[in-house]
Amino acid sequence: MCGIVGFTGAESAAQNILEGLEKLEYRGYDSAGVAVLNDGIISITKVTGRIAALKEKTNNGLALPGTTAIGHTRWATHGAPIDINAHPHISNDGRFAVVHNGIIENYMDLKVSLIKDGYRFESETDTEVVVHLLEKYYNGSMKDCIRKVAAKLKGSYALGILCTEQPNKIFATKQSSPLILGVGVGENYFASDVTALISHTQNVIYLEDGEFAEIDRESIKIYDCTGTEIKKSISHVNWDIQAAEKGGYEHFMLKEIVEQPRAVKATLTPRIRDGKIVLDDLDLDLTGIHKVLITACGSAYYAGCAGKYIIEKLCQIPVELQLASELRYSSLIINDGTLLIVLSQSGETADTIAAMKECSEKGAKTLAIVNVVGSTVAKLADYTLYTNAGPEIAVATTKGYTTQLATLYLFSVYAAGVLGRLSKEKYSQLIKELLSIPKLLQETMDMNSKIENTAKKYFNSSSMFFIGRNTDYAVALEGALKMKEISYIHAESYAAGELKHGTIALISEGTPVIALACNEDIKEKTISNMVEVKSRGARVLAVALNDDKKIAMLANDIIYVPRFDSVFSPILEVIPLQLLAYYVAKFNGCDIDKPKNLAKSVTVE
Ligand code: AGP
Image (cartoon, rainbow, N blue to C red):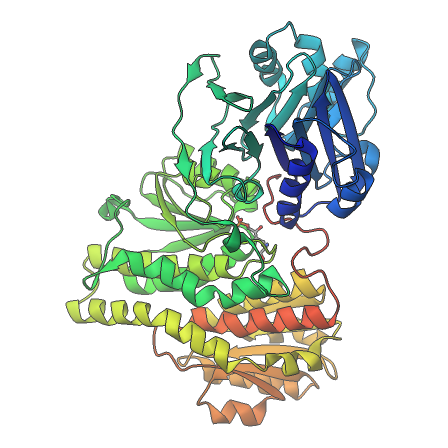
């Protein structure tokens, strides 16, 4: 997804921008650019490809003197990833430059009208309308100008702006897309997310929709949508640059896989005190809830699939699942008896935000389970449970998924307790099991330290099937996505019992089938499915409990997880699947942290 960065201070602005853009690379992009305001002139350099090319073209920023600049990484939506479509865009009169994250949905109407007014367009982008509107409406006051321009725009935007008549200032405004201000000493910033700022400051201001910031090196003035200056609090980010660095690992993804025991511990332990679950910020009356609706995208949705089983089992409340991008077109019954649980690592996924707004309008109470503090999902929700995973940089989520699942487990036990669905003994037993998860995650990791050898047997597959039943199936969904998104191998997940209704036609000699058979209650059925596919030539890689010798005899290869007789056991199964996907992708020479076509946070619908 696009990323924007702005800097004004005493140092070389271009170098700060390039450094900030490098920290946003994980969001996914295909072109980049920087604009520097110096002595009343805006100089722009853009490239198609990586930040390294931009650094080379600007001699690491030295070719662009000046202390005020804006920069952009572009994930193409409107117009091919070529230089002319890269941001920043500049007005015909050269007075304005703009960078943008989001989509201007009414850009075609605006473009037709601006062309009629005599403005010349260079690019195919939606963004370029903004810079011509700035030129059209500017009357000496940026505040008035931006208010008039914002009133014309429909869609989502985080905008960074330069104006030659406003030396040493950068301007920022937002609607639906994320935008954070960085408060430095003798310098100030804006950026799409904290990662771009954290090496300079841990003091940030979260800009809200409709607000506008006028920033120079000594001050940040913020105005609300009426143009009235407002005071906003400064938040302190509770992690530092080391957390956002690789820490010696070859890839962020491997670092984040390894971090999971610690991340899940940070999710669980602060909320379990004296044998009780304490959710301070959840003063939700659960007795009025008749059903839970879980919505999310991608891996977050698959965490919801696994969470559904636990909530229904422990709370005896019906749980519906709906993909966020489908929800608004569905005719689900949503009202004030509905608790919407929204899952999102970034808290900026456009489909998820749209679904959340839809459900809120219909009266649902919204509980966000989200990782990024101050994100749009967190701010929109009635209640928020942060997953405390720390920054997740790799596009493919790992600790984001497991901490979401851990938070769903926590909520399930809490809710079942509040609703009186658990005996004291059962409640205490579940608390003990929750507290044992981090150690068992580490044990699972240690048990699979040689999974590289298994990956060597599968990395040149053209397709794979991940099968399982009930909770095993929910984890199989995530395992297939991990494999697809980083190794580019076509991987399907199927309910094991469903294979014989058509898909088994695709099984031929050597077809890899990853069979998850850890759920004791139903694994015999999955074993039958394993035999079915093996008899048709499949190569079966089983995921089983470490004392299950029977499966080892049936499968071609086996991956073990520790026996964990608990409703929470599915959280362990995903670990070897993450590692399998990682090493398969590595053997395939894929760009593991920044897979092609993907973005870390999909902030467009
Ligand atoms: C997962 O590895 C993917 N990066 C993707 O499916 C992701 O889970 C999805 O886009 C949702 O993102 P979110 O959790 O930030 O909302």
